[in-house]
Length: 240
Image 1: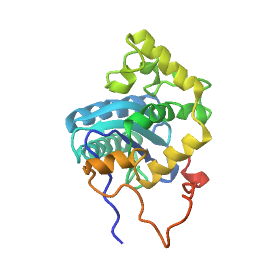
Image 2 (image 1 turned 180 degrees about the horizontal axis):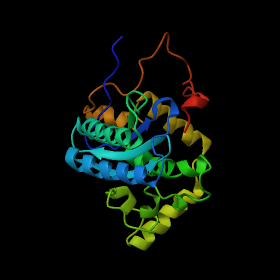
Image 3 (image 1 turned 60 degrees about the vertical axis):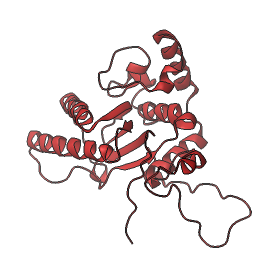
C-alpha cells in the first residue's frame, strides 16, 4: 500500500518532527547545536521556508514553519539533513544514518492552533525535565518570543504580532501563554496530528478552499457511528 504524500495547504503553517535513529543523540555538545542551527538558517533561506518556532532537543527537533511552495519544506529538510549528517559524521568519526526515517509533519490551521503549537514546541524542554522554565533553554525560539534576545532564525507570524501593539505587549502576552501551559487534551491532539500527518484543526475551512494536495483525514472504516469516537491515543514511545 502506497504511503500518502505529505499534506500541504497553501499559506498554512506546518509542524515538523525529526528524531535521531533509535533515539540516537544528534547533538552532543554546544558546537553541534550551533552548527545545526546555522545549517537550519541557511537551508530555510534557500528553500524559502519561514521558521516561526523551533526547539533542538538532544535526540529530536521540532519546527513550526510556513513554506512558500508545496515542496519547500521537503527541500529544506533534505538540504539540512544532508549537510548536518555529513558534518556530524566527520566530526564524530562515524558513518551511516543519523535520522529515524522520514521526518513527520502536519498542517496547522493557524487561527485555532498556531499559538498552541508554538507553545507546545517551546515547552518541550520543560516537559522533558531539562529546565524549569522554557526561557532557560538555550536551543529554542522561546527567548526570542519572550524578549530575551533576537533570533535571526525567526520570522514572526501575524498571530504572534496580534498579541499586542508593541514588542513589550507581545512578549508579555506570549509569556502568559507559556505560563498557562498545554492541557492534556491539547497535547494529545497535537501529537496525534503530528505523528499521523492529518490536519490539526480547520478541516471544514480547508476543504471549502479545495487547495489541499490530498485528503485531510483518514477514510472512515465500516458503518458510520452515531457518535464521533475520540482520537486514538499515542503510545508512550511516540510522545515528546
